Image (cartoon, rainbow, N blue to C red; front, side, top):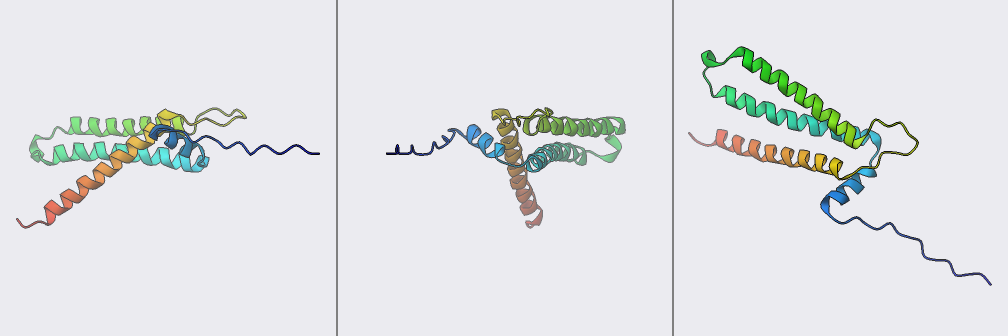
Length: 136
């Protein structure tokens, strides 16, 4: 007589947005996580650069300090590289061990903040387009 087989153990689904996002990210391929890190850093850096451009656009050209403008743009580029490094560290990791990186809440927060910033800038752009197309 054989013993009845136990039902297969199912993985418990994580609760909370950050845990679910971290679980979803951990199932993605390495290449996809690299693209997510790059896209999040690019979106955040672009938004900061657009805000700076908007500030400079509203000033008269003879009042712009070129040295300050160049320093700010170089600073934004360095910030973009730092954000990409952070995303790489959280989503891919630098460890070449036999066990893969376990994606945590920090990586999920990084991706969700990038998605929130991307959504906000899309809404901002739609309002700007509507304002530009409205009658004077």
